[in-house]
Length: 364
Image 1 (spheres, rainbow, N blue to C red):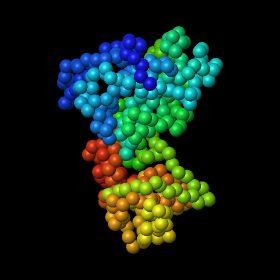
Image 2 (image 1 turned 45 degrees about the vertical axis):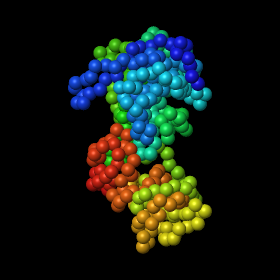
Image 3 (image 1 turned 135 degrees about the horizontal axis):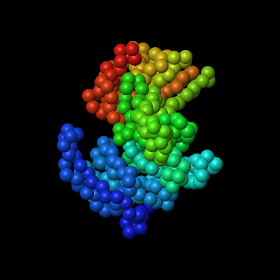
Image 4 (image 1 turned 120 degrees about the vertical axis):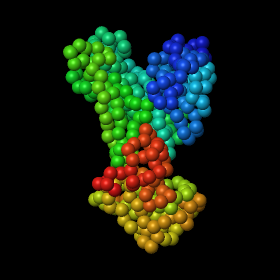
């Protein structure tokens, strides 16, 4: 959907600045085109090599996002070709009626920021469930924004399979994280076998007891298993998962799995579904561990180098456990060669080139 410029509501003046050291900044380059509202943001999409500008404006469902992109950050100040991007929808639940005056109104999209994680873009959607600014100001309570994750292959089209809220406010008076949650530009970082999500939240109550919509701000963190966004699970009854055809250039298969009380075996098939010897399930050394980086080997043959460049399928046989991720690394260290969001200790940058060396000794 494209909303003509003349029909878009007026917003604020914005400018882009750059710095080589974080201390001295260039003169601002004013944005042109439709003005953005008060919560615009940007991120870099390395898969398409563009800077993306997430512009807050109003759309059919209230607060929404417009999209502009440019390969050059400063040139990206031209927002004249920005297009309507995304908003909340009928799958986003409103705040239950009765919780505060005016509850039950349709949610709005307060912000959308993103970062590259492994082989996709991880997007943090700020879903505003209410109340209106007028109600918050009158009642002296924080707005209620929940943080929900989305996933994208191109950085424009998003899938949000879970609308329950990834990080949510408690709604309880006196709690530091009662409401008005905000993520960071980097979304998360990798710390050993965990993903760390810093965020801010508001209680609505300052240390001196005064109350207000933007009062009582604090910083917290949420932790998640690395790659722990979703898993394929099996209980006592064994389960199998077969991938679509994939092509790789690595030599060593690794999995992120929780199978300490069960087992996982992997086999490799050709495009027609026939097992490629010697990479059969029967020949696979069973994986019975709970770690984020586990090598998969087959008796007499640990390397899959002979299959590089060929279209193959992986079939996983799982009992009593969870499979979170798999990849083929160029060496025994298990580097995924994927993106690391905001990076983390032990890594030289935002791409995993070291694998197990980044883990604390106790986690290796």
